[in-house]
Image (cartoon, rainbow over all chains, first blue to last red; front, side, top):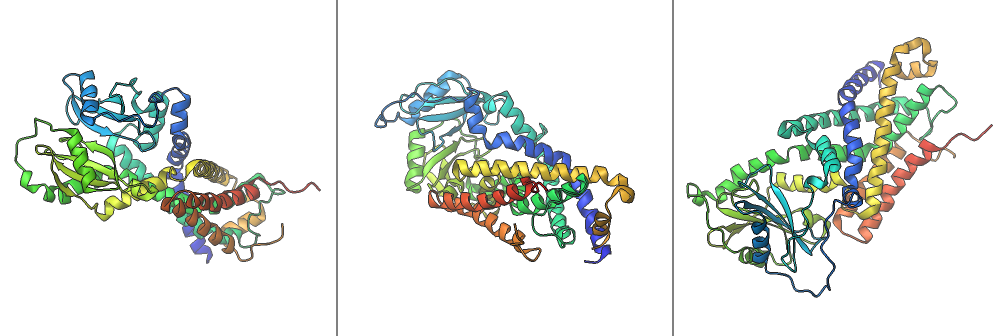
Length: 378
Length: 59
């Protein structure tokens, strides 16, 4: 590479990194507890568990489950009904004053007795809620998400330019050499290059999928305004649904349409994830991938009849697949641990990078000759 | 350690492929697939840990 090109890529690497570094540090630090959100919520005592009963205990009728939840908040409407495949003994519900109430109430109901369980803390309690918002939207809603998404794009630029610079900086060294005998700056440069190249593909994947996740709200809107709107065109202009049918029948109809899949969640008519006239029952498969690629089944809210089983468009598939690849929650405890270690390695890359920039001012005088030479051209 | 990795891109490409295998395999299934994922990503993390944390032998 010519010295001119090295300088050009160095400039790209420096500025894309500098602008995004503070936010990337924030994302790495808040991402760490999020990897273990389940364990932390459990340890903080913010987890609600259904009482142990024999596995053969019959499950309560779902209409009774819904009725129990609604009785707890008279006057509120159902927004979502969901079940985690790891927690089949309880149903989670959210209720609000309107189907789009931002101050919704979460509820848990025992799936076998249809009894209310203790109220779960919103977003897993104050600590996890704060980690979540600092990681996802900086408490600034869609614009916060899009801003962090833009920072993620800068991160990708920084990673790519870093790769371009990797060879000029390490060509003369055996892989993994950290020159401990030299100045701290050289040592940290070597460490920066080593951990940068080790985390390269992981960071690109986690960064890119994180960026895609920031577009989730927008992609959902696109899907609703195009394919879903076309599919439900005959319902346009009809008065909103007032009488809700039987959830037992809705779920039975969806399960009949997609045999072998189970209900992940039901979005009630009028909510963000449904239409004004339909339930959307999101069905999930049993493999890690099909569990993510939820299949929406559209159910008429007046008749409880299935209108259509929807194939998600490519961009929704991309969004769904990008979620596990960002969260690292699809390979058990081992994967979580590796995710955390790679996250920590990324923090080291960020900190060493920042240090290298801060120490640039000492310039030629304080820099060892070989660093000067490497930086200038190689 | 001797110079196991010759040209500058050999190790990075190997690490990249291992990372790719690790990320994708756990998506495909449980059990063996998770194990494959853990081993391949584990090697990547171990390489980073080994070279990053080792100290030069005392002279």
